[in-house]
Length: 236
Image (tube, rainbow, N blue to C red; front, side):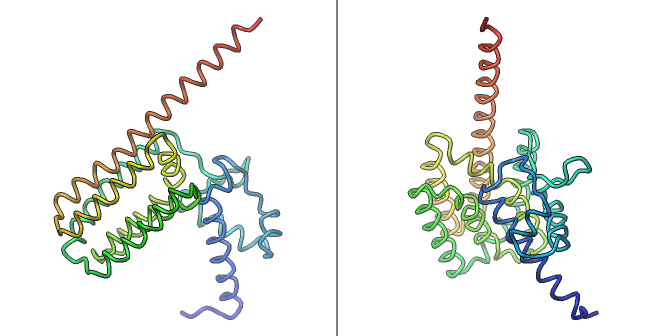
């Protein structure tokens, strides 16, 4: 059934609002827990509250926004166990897809991944933090696309979106930008060699390395907060 004339513009406005808000969340413009007020967003975007409300519902389905009766819409905040769980799901899906993709990858697929990796490395050097997660996801998706599994790829893309902020946090950790650069180059080289088994095994470790780095960060952060509370209690 085709859309009526009145439905089509609203769908376009909703899509535009969704894309804009998603990009602003993924770029880090809003921190975890930030409140997203429909009225203010509708003024900023120059649209009515209806497409903004529908956009926020779509972003809630993607896991980027949480909507409650008390606070309305806020940028989702994940606990460490939730981040780890999402990374483990990424391992299961991405390694399986890469195994299937590598025998079908063409020279054009490899060239696209190389170009994205070059842009990612430039963003690392320029400390363009907002681009890190996006380019990281685009590089991985370029390697998986040859598997021709659109439903699985859509799930993987959602997982990358949900963990994007934490990917950037992981890269910000000491010395991890160099490690990310080296690991991406090694993964790409295994794809060039058509070594699917080794590439999938390496990809698994690559994602688990991110998990380890984030766990170390959270443990250090918790110790720092605990020490700060202890020092405040000791003050007369």
